[in-house]
Length: 99
Image 1 (tube, one colour):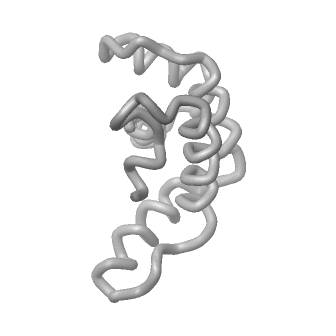
Image 2 (cartoon, rainbow, N blue to C red):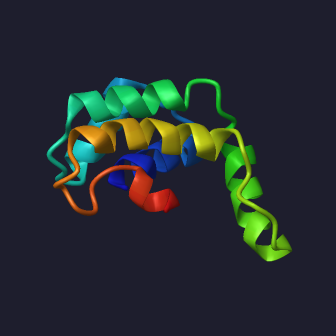
């Protein structure tokens, strides 16, 4: 989950969501950074409009709609691929954020 938060922080600061930037944010927060997870996150977010994805995700529960496809779904798929490699790490991975 902290990987997604790092991306959101970078987005809010109008900084590029690149591997080195994500790694710097995570290290500053004291996270033991896994390079493969950083790569998966940045690849998943490459073509995603984060502002739109956040707005859509925030509006969906209020409207009673199903979760929006696109940005959030791509991040979840990347997380599930990473989670398959490390199922024993409870609470680790992006899949926890999206259920």
